[in-house]
Amino acid sequence: MQFMVMRRANHNTEQGKLPPALEPGIFLQPSMGAVRLSRKSGQWSQKIGPFPARELVASLTLIETESMDDAVAQVSNWPMTDSGAIFEIRAAGGPGACAGFDERGTAAGTLPQRDVRLRRYVIFMRADMLSELDMELPAAVTDVMNNYNEQGVQAGVLLAGEGLRASFSGKRVKFALSQLSVVDGPFTEVRELIAGYWMVQAENREAAIAWARQYPFPQQGELELELREVLELPNYRTFTPEMRREEQQIRANMLEVELSTAISKARAERAR
Image (cartoon, rainbow, N blue to C red; front, side):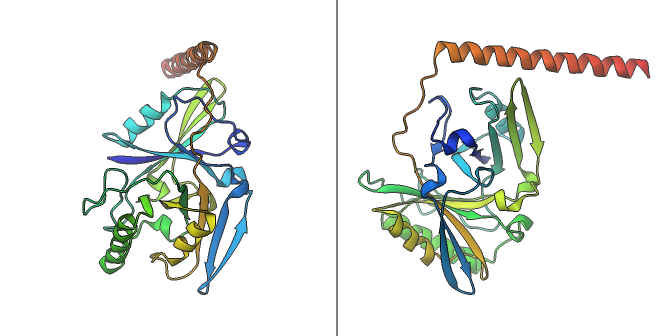
């Protein structure tokens, strides 16, 4: 199974402070240069960032595991260097037969070709109440999307794309001080959620926006997109021996808290 792991943005990521290189993922530029595109009554409008950090994604990566529990376990073992980091895990593959694709190729076997002279942009489809219902899309709709995606890859514009299942099957892994917690979906703040994404390469932001406006989105009514530039060759912090010792101490504290909680529960049950 494939899962999308999205690091939720916070003050650090919006200030351009990145975690060590050991953390996987494609990192995005802070939202200062982001654009939100809104379509209402067939007309497009746009708003330039920055946007509230709680509504943003700072990085994304696809992982393949046997189950959601395995995905949570994998993310829980990523380096703990950013107290307050939150990772949202969602099952990849939107409802219906719209096929995701990446560097491994499209359903037709076409491989995206990266042109390093061009900038990469991630175009997020913001979630709404309809996308959170996980309704199956008609085959006629997904056929149009699949064909358009294939043409975009062949044209050297599209590099990746994927839909996400609704948040009721998702989870969030939260790191806070010496504690790690897992929160089950659904997540009530729909404005904070992503329903899917595409990655395009273009000469500039305006060209990426023009492509996004032409896409045959499944929604017939209102729609909101968010365009973010990929952070190319990011200046990662070095994962120093001091940071490793700090992480080991954090995990030791977490284990102590878990053992103390388990002992307290066992005592309470015996006292009943």
